[in-house]
Image (cartoon, rainbow, N blue to C red):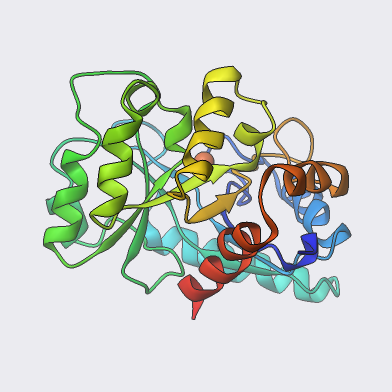
Length: 241
Ligand SMILES: [Fe+2]
């Protein structure tokens, strides 16, 4: 599979919303990382974490993407940014979901990207997912391989996957950028065939960037061609269909 066919469903590309690019110029640098390797579309997934400054409204994300898309078009850059959100898992999410505080992937789908906490807390990261499913929604867990709870209980994640919870792993985890535990678990999840999506979780053109050609070659050594095609192109494409 060519890197150009990769549809990235998880990246922090919108300026001024979270710990992604601060300014438009940095956002455009990140866009260039994608276009330089032929990638044509991504889903922008700014953090949503109530109780912090990361509590962006869906309307603001949609308006910002409209503006950015116009800027790209004015500069002759063919690149599509699709709305989404990376929603931090908290207790009692059903009310916010019902009142439309969360933006699904693609803007109008019924699939939400949910981020479990990195460290073990009093929160069972799977409990809140039930609230989404009870409202007929689908969920994708963002990078559970980086989450201590799932590193300690990978079988719980495997069972959840069997019950319909989709799993997204980060390119960087497989490449060892988030330490040996995340790398080991990402490989384990691939071996168990419980990975549905591969994404960059890119934050900038520099420190946490989308995969370049040499990293993509490395990923091709770690993932079978059939699986890579399914988790990096086919499943992301279905999300946007
Ligand atoms: Fe993220």
